[in-house]
Length: 182
Length: 178
Image 1 (cartoon, rainbow over the protein chains, first blue to last red):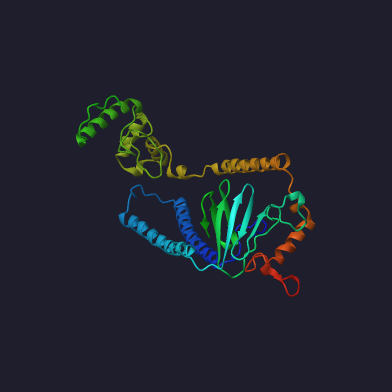
Image 2: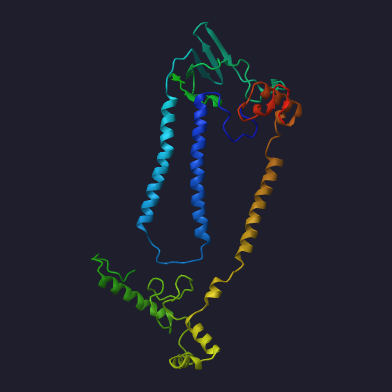
């Protein structure tokens, strides 16, 4: 879960989330590089007291600063595409959990071996104990086995909802009348 | 621009120069007795002190008999001109020297003052919000026992075990890592 005043991602609980964090770090490196270069240019232009009123254009310079960013974008785009397709890879899941969104609780169904269905309501703040996380804890928790492939089918009963586990790097909209697989 | 022809015609150089000549005739009335000495910034008869444009289109002062006499003496030997004469000749053509143009004007003081004023205004608005707008913080944050219970639970469920919270707890010795 998120710690207080956290700005970064939660630690990854699945390999996909780990890859997402790595991609985020990689893109952030390139972005900081670009911002440093651009801010250096801005500051040096601003503090430069020389004046040349005939400095109007330079075709080689424009060619350079059009082609180099395209290379930088390729550096960002290739890992991005790889990750995009990696996220949609389908393996052999060991268990299937159905998640249905209602107003305003989730209901879960584990139908593989036993027919297990339960509703998961948030614990209101006035009923919570000392160690309950405010607005996060629920009465019946969803238990997912560790180190296994899990398929989650997400849908909704009334309006649009969205189901996410940030540490696993999954988020999918719960659309009534539609099954989304994660 | 009523003087420009309404019927469009090809913008040849002669057409352009005719239009410029018409504008110049209007401008000559505006500049008075001042002499036109060049192209300036854009060809219009204006005087501007700018460090990028050292030679404005017109002289700064109108031609007076004293200045005309000085200009006659300027055609001779410059060593015979005194420093005051040379300064008068300069000021006849120009308003400011380069040093005066580049001189610091102290605007940064008022700019800094207004910026700090704006920052302090937003600070006061924030204080007003804390006092009158925001509801009190929930007791899960203000109550220290609840915070400690939550922290213990977060450590027990191994929140952020890689480089976050639980990675800093020594599980064998039940204390924070040194």
